[in-house]
Amino acid sequence: MSIKQIILSRLHSIEREGMSDLIHFLTSESDYFKAPASIKGHCNYPHGLAIHSHNVVELLLQKNNQYHLGLSKETIYLAGYLHDLCKTNIFYPTLKIRYNHKNEKECYFTYECLDDVPLGHGEKSVILAQQYIKLTLEEILLIRWHTGPQTPCENPYRYDQALEKCPAIKAIFTADEEAATFLETIKPTPVFQPSVFYAWKKTGVLPKI
Image 1 (cartoon, rainbow, N blue to C red):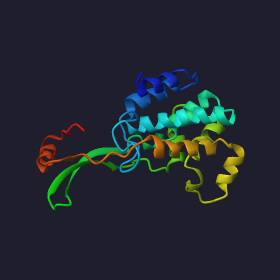
Image 2 (image 1 turned 90 degrees about the vertical axis):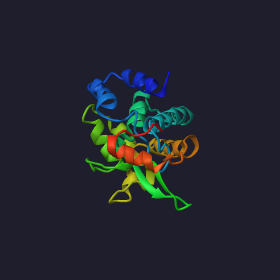
Image 3 (image 1 turned 120 degrees about the vertical axis):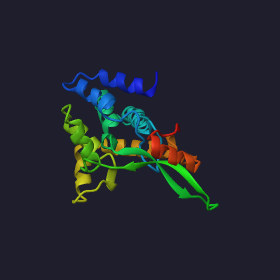
């Protein structure tokens, strides 16, 4: 099965009110299965967001067994697959012109980040998910604090308080970091002749990458 099929199969296995609406959002109302995970960092290419989310789930499943964290598969699937829900519908593919190291004009593919719902990172993912399903407190904490001690917060002691409530936060944080560092790549920017840029300006059709 493809990663998309595995993700959908796992989410369909969760019996919770609103799951069908959440899945509809992921497949039909967002670019969850098309978006990159970043612009210049890990998984900076189409489908990168889903790939990264799946890697986090797989690592979190391993950590849950290894460290006896007591997380249910349902919680792992929801926290892992939704932790970066905030990245849906914000990356827009585009072409730009620049001069390369030979001082020659070239066209390159990239993404622009335009966030119409600027609510933060982990907290935004929680808010978006709860438009469709009710998350448990454990799931909320895992998603909200998945960026670990670097999570922006007005009170630096809140992270420690969150860890006391849910020690598994450290597992999803390290899974997120390990996936981005060891399992995923940063692909070089696709480059084209300047004529491709001008053709795109006329037709609105992006080249295949």
